[in-house]
Length: 159
Length: 159
Image (cartoon, rainbow over all chains, first blue to last red; front, side, top):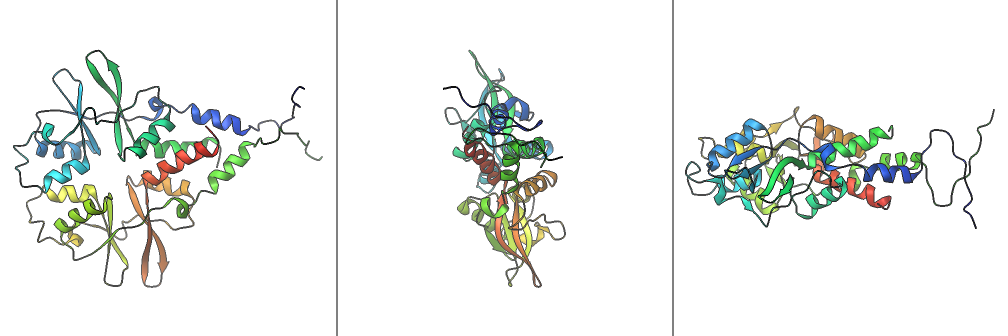
């Protein structure tokens, strides 16, 4: 039996159209510009850099510009109340390293990326390109980006 | 003239149904438990408390449990690299005070609240009840809550 064909008002879309529009949201369309620091930068300088760039997460790279680590505001706050001299401690001592870094790629679905941020309990992760040399950072995906996407869904549907 | 009535497949919904489901998302359904500290707590103790409670924002209350201020991880990091003794500085010195505190109420639309987080460039705000005595804190709304709501929209629509 053939399915019964329905008639729709002009301009109306089904939930299927919404589902599709949510699936079409990609990391590349909502990501931010990454802020990177060298792995020999001091923790003190990293804190200053975080404020001057006004971001919540810094990505640490080596001389070949390959991702080596991630520094969250939480990591920096933890070390700032420690006993060590922040001017003598390089960031590679306190950063989160591979294989513990959560990351995503340009073409990932924003929903999958959002789930990863929640599961890993992080505010931000690098958007990378996987190369033979290692992970090259191309962007930064944050809960702020997801919040903007949430708002854009409402606006797309004229709330 | 009466509108032409259309026929729909069983189980299909129009975008109108989605729009309605987004408008029905309220702050009260996604908020987290607030973490409060007294206004005479030291900055050092507030940092320790932020770690032990694992939150990104603390709300500061007076003796009558009325909202007096907000402390973000950023505020605490800024003061931690200052020259003052964190064990001698009370949080009321560095907190954001009224009328500069963004807040929302239980019944607010999650979309409106999300827009407020973006506009004010904050990660979190108190959910309050407005009383004659002042603002009583009932919850905490964060970009993590909005991210969870974004994921729940996808799941509601079976992506």
